[in-house]
Length: 224
Image (cartoon, rainbow, N blue to C red):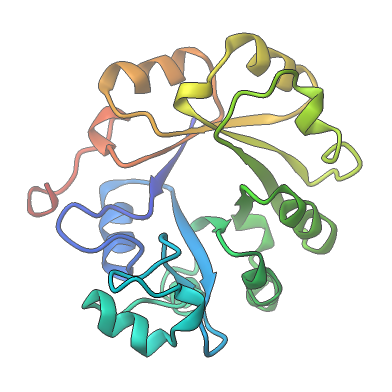
């Protein structure tokens, strides 16, 4: 099972920062999940929320202004990829307008085989799968009435073979169906030891988590 750190390991440092990524990798995670938005000055920045702490849309702020708003330097995707060139990246496209630059940055570095592009905007994922030689996946926060309602757009795209389920939406029957159709199942949102154990028992291919201790990893004392 692939172990991916959700926004890095943010127990003593801000999430989605180079420090959080370094902490996660030093703990033993093999991959990093991070969130991509486009700033007003055209930078692909790593930031989860769509609104700043001062109530401003992230898309209306320059990277410098956003950093001043949150009180730390918000990294760009380019900086993260350069800082950790051998890392497996789960790049979640939060804002569709960030897609073009994000794909260009990945392609320019030739790291397609170490990238999983995901989004709740499924049309964006289809575009990524058509344009980039990298794994792509649909993020799912609701249980579909039937698997074919979400898989139909993915079937023509051979690189779009990953489903990322919220833990509360897990259904063994749907997981079995997806596996039979050649899809890989990832999970995010598990919060307890039991929930992580259940993911393992269900045979998911990867887990995106904030809890290294529940997946057999031991954080450094300074990071706990």
